[in-house]
Image 1 (cartoon, rainbow, N blue to C red):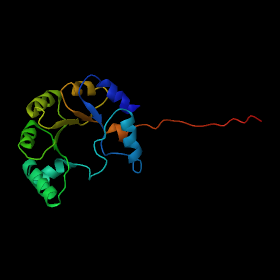
Image 2 (cartoon, rainbow, N blue to C red):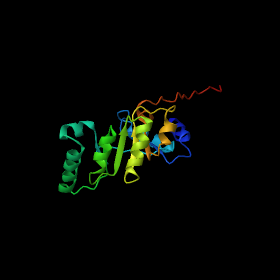
Image 3 (tube, helix red, strand yellow):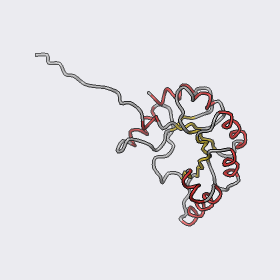
Image 4 (cartoon, helix red, strand yellow):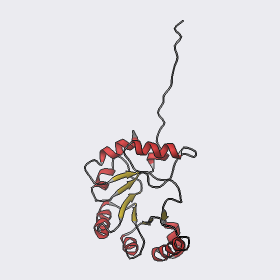
Length: 173
């Protein structure tokens, strides 16, 4: 139901709603299935489905360019063909990511709407664009209208309330 609400709010835009890897321990398969049942798409099931170069990777490598270079070298040595996404927090980082080979998606993490629109225009459909960071039902429509391809919502898996269902038998004797 939660995913369906998000999907419904962005109806009429090109944006797809996606989850994150943040799931209840032991329930990942069910959490991911619930997102698909609600009309969303799964971001990745595990760490081996796709490479996500996050802020810590970028900082430890000394920048996006070096982080992507190291990632590409690792993938080549191990003959792995995985999608590569780079998390960015500024327009300068978006520009740096665009200059790298092998990127398939750029995540715009905690961008305001004006910067998000500018980033989407700068990227120009060369790679997929994902918006992320504190997106709620109240804020998602304007995010979708910026032209992003995906909007990741961690609340679809890590904060959904369980449905209170019970089954009571009544004796007919």
